[in-house]
Every structure is written in C-alpha cells, then in structure tokens.
Image (cartoon, rainbow, N blue to C red; front, top):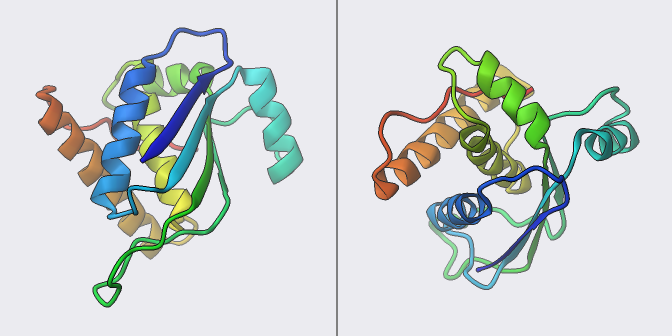
Length: 165
C-alpha cells in the first residue's frame, strides 16, 4: 500500500499514526495492497478555500475526500480486488483540535485526526452519511475500524465518538 502523508499545516501532528490508521483501514476494507492514497494536512485558511471551491460552503471543515479511481471494497464474488489511485484526504488539525475539545468524550487533536482519516478513507470508498441508514452503516464501520486499530496498538478505551461535521 502506498500512502503519502504531507503536512503543510504548520501544526505538529502524529503523521505516523495517520499513516498507520490509514493502512489499517484499507487493509480492513480489503483494498488491494498496490493501491495508492494521499493524505494532506492543511491549515484552516487552505481548508476554507477548498471547502468553498468544492462544496460551496463557508469556513474550514475537518476533512475532505477527493476520490480518483472510485475503488470499492471487494465483494465475495471478486477473485481479486482492483487496485488504483484511491485519491486524496485533506485534514485540518485546527478544526480537529476544536472538535476534540467539544466532543462528548473529549479527546486530543491527534485522536480526532485518526478518526477523520478513517472517515476520509470510507468516503473515498463510496460510503456517505447523508441519510440515516447510510450514516449508521458508515459510523458503525468507522468506530469498528478505529477501535480495532486502537486495540491492536494497545491504546486504552474506545474510539472517540464521531464529531465529523
């Protein structure tokens, strides 16, 4: 799996954890090991520009996903999952820090960025949360992936509650 993490935000983040949880999420979703993913960490101004340009919404957001080859998790009938360019996930640590502090179960900026990385991966794989059934499926899968990764790493406690805007 080729995953690049590029921190352009000026904020110190745990890039290794972002890389590790992205790799874990893709493996858990059975994405071909030759697939490629890019994670970019930007400041609030850059995120706001992207948010306006692509979503026509004001202000910075926490995470944005830009799919490329529209890869999907393989079904039982697939002999081998396809591979390609998954796309880009853009994270904003300033928004992540604020959300972590405001969450029901307060958590750190890095924990929020890990959650947002999984959220972004799931968006790249076609999951969404616009309607209640899709939201329940996506957020359940997101929690299972984050909890599994945390357990594998020996980290205490359950994953942070979803705070994605």
